[in-house]
Structures are given as C-alpha cells and as structure tokens.
Image 1: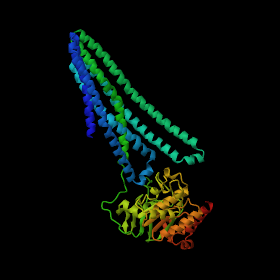
Image 2 (image 1 turned 30 degrees about the vertical axis):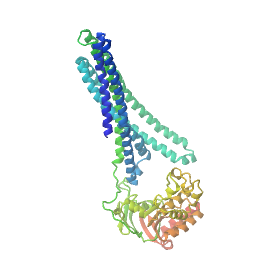
Image 3 (image 1 turned 120 degrees about the horizontal axis):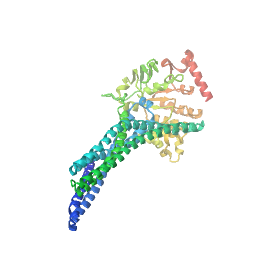
Image 4 (image 1 turned 60 degrees about the vertical axis):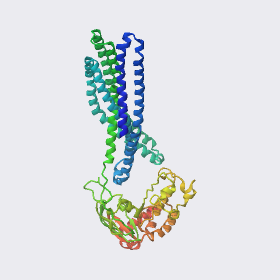
Length: 566
C-alpha cells in the first residue's frame, strides 16, 4: 500500500500549502498593502501564485498515486471471493441466493475500491487538516479559535449518533440490493416459464414490492445523510457569523490587526470543505465497512469438503467403487428427520455397469453426488480401488470419476470448450469420439461448428442437444468411473437408442453408475440396485429382480408408465 501513503502525503502537503496561503495574505495586508509600497507587493503575490500551483500539483499527484491501489485491491478481493466460491461445497451454494453473492462480488467491492482510492485518503487528510487548521486559528487569535473549536463539538456528537443509525440502514440497503439481484436473475433464467404460464405480471408485482422496499430504505438512508448535512452546513455558517462579530470587535479594540482577521477567515474558509466533507466521508466509510462485513461473511465460511493433508495418489485406477454403511443428511435438516441415505451398502466391480432405480425422492441423485464429494457422507465410507475418496485430492478424485447430470448445464463458451471442460488437453480424435457416442454431431451444422459460442446456460440449444453435449463432456473426460444421473431423459426414443448403443462401447471398459428413469436405460446395466427409503434393498440382474422383488416390479411399472406418457 505504499502508493496510498504517498497519496495521503501528497494530499496532506496540498492541505498544508492551502493553509500557508492565508499566512502570506496576512503578511501582505499588514505589510505592503498597509504601507502602500507597490514594489513590495510583487513577491507575496508571486508566492501565493506559486503555492496555488504547488497545491494543484499535489492534488494531481494524490489522484495519480491512489488510482491503482484501489483497483488492485478490488481485483484481488474479487479473485479471492471467486476462488472461495469455487472452493466452498455445494451445500453452501444451496443455502445462498446467487443474487446475494453477485452483489457482494460487484457492488460491495466497488464500494471498497472507492473508499480505498478516495474515502480513506480524504478522511485521514481532512481530519489532519482540521487539526492543523485549528492550531493556525488559535495562533492567530486564541479567542476566535476557541469559538471555532466549541462550535465544532456538536458535529462530532452528531457524527457519533449518525454512525450508529447509518450503519444499520446501510446494511439493510445492501442486503436488499442482493435480494433484488436474486429476483432479477431468477426472472431472467425463468423467463420461458413466466411467459408460458402468463405470470410475467405477477413477477413484476413481486419485483415492484422488493424495489419499493429498497427505495424506502434508500430514502431513509438519504434522510440520515441529509440530517448530518444540515449540521455540517448550519454550524460552519453559524461559526463564521460568531467569529466575524468577535473579530470585528477585537479589531476595533486594537487586539487584532486587519491582516490577522483576513488570515483567520481565509484559514477558516480553507477548513470549510474538510469540515463539510466529514458527512459524506463518514457515510462512505460506513458503507465500505458494511461491504467488508458482507464480503467476509463469505470468505469466513468454513469449507467442510477439503483435501487431506497428505493425499494418496491413485496411479492406475481400476474403477472398483464400494459404498460401506453410507449415511447422509443435509446439515440444516431437523434432528428428528431420518437420514436421507440410511446405511447404503453397494459394490461396483471394475468395468461393471450398475443401474440405480427407485421412486422419486428415494435419494438416487444424492447418492451419485457423494461419489465426487459434491457432498460428503455423514457416516460410512466410499472407496475407489480400496482408497477412501476423502483420502484423495479432490482434483484427482474428479479426474477419475466423471458425472453427467440430468439438468445439463453448459457455459457461455465454445462447443469445444464445453465438451473438453473435464479434459482440456484431449485430442481431436477423443473429442470426435465423445461427440459421436453422445450423438452430438449436430454441432458441425452450427454457424462456427465446434467454435460456436453457446449462449448463457446453452439456452440457444434444445434440451436434448444440451443433454447430449453434457454426456459428451463426461465421456471425453475418459474417467475410470462414469456416473450418469439420468442423462438421456430429454432425448427422443430413436436418439436414445442410438446413444445407448454407442454407450455400450464405453461402458464395456468403464465402471458406471447410472440413475435410470427408463426401462431402456436399465437394460444397459449388468446389474440393478434398488433404492428404497434411503437403503439398497435389492441388487441383481433385471430379470432376477423382476422375478423376486415386488417393489422392483412396482418401480419398473411406474417407469414404463412414464415412458408411455412421455
């Protein structure tokens, strides 16, 4: 932060120079002007001109010094915040609205930058200027200086009251900005749903209520600032009036020269801006403090899913995955709620394809998320080739296990970058193979082919196209274990058949855990695991379970109905 200190130094020199000018004026008025000596006037005038030029130069230097540090601090804080958001577990993002995170990353850090580049420098320098200026005033006339000092006391008292009131309002305002940003984001992401159901007006009304609340808070905030500005403008004017009366009386009694009176009021004029600036500098400081508090709410969040101190290394993974007495419950779940997964025991042999079936809400997607530590087990273990996955580095684990989700998320990047997200160094042959397996050759007909930039979340593509690209992304990663959470739900029957036929080649040499919502997906598997109320209640081939398990027949029949009605 050397440049900040240099900026403060330059600003302080500028203030000192401004305070020296009245002293030169005192000498000019009491000397050459009173004596009527025109030749002696030139030097003081040139000196005042030189001091004015020096003050302007110091102000320019102050701005030049402080411009870079604020932007650098803002950039570092924003990068640290983004890094922290990437590190924090999915459970954190489940709890935090995206708009709140966005407001912290953008508007809050912008407040911090402005305070570092402008607020803190002027606040420190202006307070120092006021103190030094009071010393000058007392040296000119102790009586007028005492009047000036006593009249400034109400400002400090009101400043203390203002701090307590404004801090609460500022925090409330910034939280409401985050809520409003969340509403905007949800409306934009859900625009198709709102339009399809004709609920745009309702969304607008809800947004209007939130915006009105924010407006009311901002008005309350403005009133608080207006209150301190009233004192900041009224008290200096009152102080000037009292000082003028006292100064005229002292000058009439010969206790104060005309030059000293001019110097006193010129010095008081120099102090006027530092005194008046205290109000908005205090409000900026409190805004920045609230922004920093909100920033550290995220930065101080504990990451419960971390790498081990000495991670084990899996050189040549075979792909054997074993769940042993696995329990899971969300951190904020009530104590009297049962575990969502309640003692899962399941083993996948290397190269085996296991289908996971169960009724909606049985915990299938949660179970798949545990394999890559998107969540950590509450109890029990998951091992990969005999190693507890918590003993592996997360990057290493997620290189060996790739996932494709039912909700296919794509990024605003090229097709190539989206597909090679898990393995950027993959060859063109691997890329082509992954696209072929996922039946995603439609990308070649896009305007720029593989270099076509997909719009936000891939909404420029159909649901089936997005799913096929998400599946290609998982295949292109070349993992030893492939976890597929119903990745074919948006595909038509013909395309699904082609994808399944191509997948068989991949699954022949890859361990796979597939959440199945269609009988055709179940047929891809070597064995099927039945998940019922958080437990694996049966494992076997499709034909074995059909013959021996009533609940499995019920689940499969419901899958058949879904396929027919779909």
